[in-house]
Length: 342
Image (cartoon, rainbow, N blue to C red):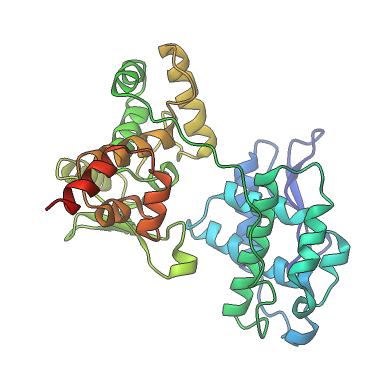
């Protein structure tokens, strides 16, 4: 069973370390970064194998969660999951009480989790939701992998989280923002997200091996692939096909979209680049990388594109998700009335 801690940095040496199976392991040299340390930890954990089989009836909750984190670390190593996401998963599970960790996995009940959540008075609605969602993800995976006989948390409902409606940036604001983009690498990413409506994280992960030339699209593991088994498709507009194929010729290995330093984009670097550009443009937080996706999907709905098509472009698991998120599009009512009046 793989047990490990999050990487930490020793200030006196400048190196990054983690505990793996109770032993301190150096992950980087003095010039290493946290991201490099997380990747090295993921590499080490993905190579852990040969653990003895454990009787599912005696398997502890801590074992299930540890094995699931090891699996997610392997996905990071394969480039299918962001190290930031892995760190979020680990953070959410690190606060579990011994009362839950030391239980047999098959003995865990929804009421035990609900009582534990209720005692965490310092957490807001989103924190409660995300922690329960992460535990449920781990147990669904354990069931698929045969680590447990049944999923005792299947009836557990997620706590309600606070839903904040995204403010869709206007075309005028996007024009101001575009004028303040100083680097071609950021402009390339900006225009791609706005053209395709993909998630920023998806754009940052795209590689030549994901490209399907005969169909003019990318296929990769998406946000819901682990649950639905369906891979995410990022379809390219006609004008982007030759651009992408030129990029693939230049970068046959590794991420296609790189920042001005030649490094792969991640959530932090994308956020920082957008904050700097919108500050120069005198704009607020409504102009973000994710807001470009909202702008594109909103435009498609307002143009009368069928909901099922927009849902596929957005990469949503169902049209109902698209309808719920974009309920602000007034034109949807007009489209429905026009269809009923035929």
